[in-house]
Length: 330
Image 1 (cartoon, rainbow, N blue to C red):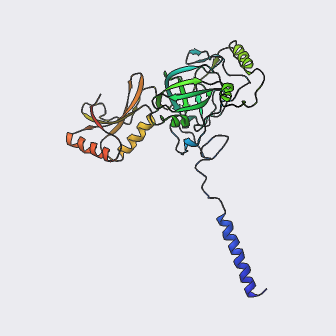
Image 2 (cartoon, helix red, strand yellow):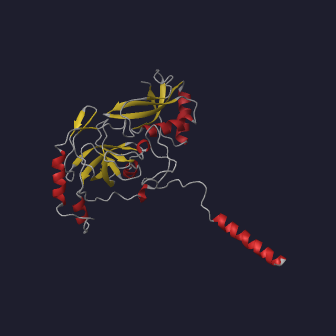
Image 3 (cartoon, rainbow, N blue to C red):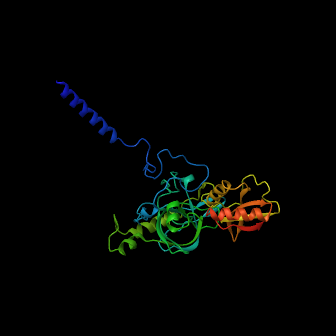
């Protein structure tokens, strides 16, 4: 082999190595991967407190649940929670109710639901106290008219008068993930009729599906009452008033600034952290019950003078963190 041939061969090998290196995948894992049939990072570690996910997914690209006829057994037997017995209905297709909805997220991501499925906070699912599992509902945000179709596969919420708990994705699509709760209308869906309205046959249609469902519903009512222990605080909006932070001077009489009030404690904590990074004034979260709903108020103070209050108000507005108003300590 001549020296020129050797150089050409070496150059070809070097080019091949460079091409091979450039085709390797990045060393860092993608922000969102599919693992075990649910969304989330590969190294997901379940937090102690519930809240919104730290990985971002465009929920507008997440399709609604597709109502599918269910011909197996329904989970609709009576069960007891916190000393109260619940009697699920045998048929949820004509269910109609209006009330408050909340959502649950990272603390329950990947955990089993009441009917054994894995909860995915970026799935389109819901928890309900009395609908048979599984079933399908249409949930409409009364304030903005947004609507989603969800698969009900879990039980709850049990710690408030809220009628339904949604996945984080569903709450995000309905526009209340940040506020924590919303007034909604919940309507049961008949999967067979849902497909018929679209001029299609439902998948895997069996003979007399309604008869099968009704037989299951009758038999489940005769089963013994189950004891079900729900996860504590199974929704993002807390139901018990809590004080966050050391609270030094928070309850003393004096001048305070209230920057926001949230149903979702995570939103309150986020605002508290942002305010703490920009002011030396004490920032704390104070929770109160208002019209049968817990609100987490983000406040600054006590503030020593009106001049100092005006300076803080201006700083908060310039940072686009809210419109503070002056209040007295309580």
